[in-house]
Image 1 (tube, rainbow, N blue to C red):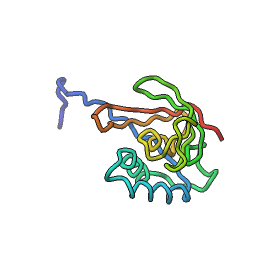
Image 2: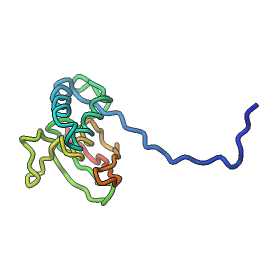
Image 3: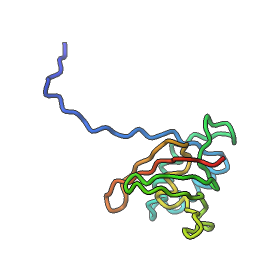
Image 4: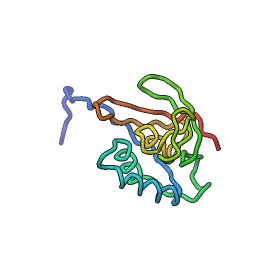
Length: 139
């Protein structure tokens, strides 16, 4: 019989990664982008990791609306508390001044496939913990 000591160490909670969804068309585009830059861009590495675990769905077949290429959403930066409204874009269409964020930035890669209310955490290239939570997602 095994007994647990009252001195059992509590391990830190590891955040559960939310399920992310992508259409087959977005999956092809995003996978190719991530593969092309994963070895030299933090956002590419995050995007590659996310595509490895993404659930591919037909448009309209996910249980809830999700962020894809071209989606407009509001998110909260969990480090600063700042709320921003952005449109997820391909790198060639990105424009910070116009609120279009590239899917190859760490934040853009973290938001792809997310549904409203879900959050995602990662460690940036300087070793700082970062996180975002999707607040609203336009249909």
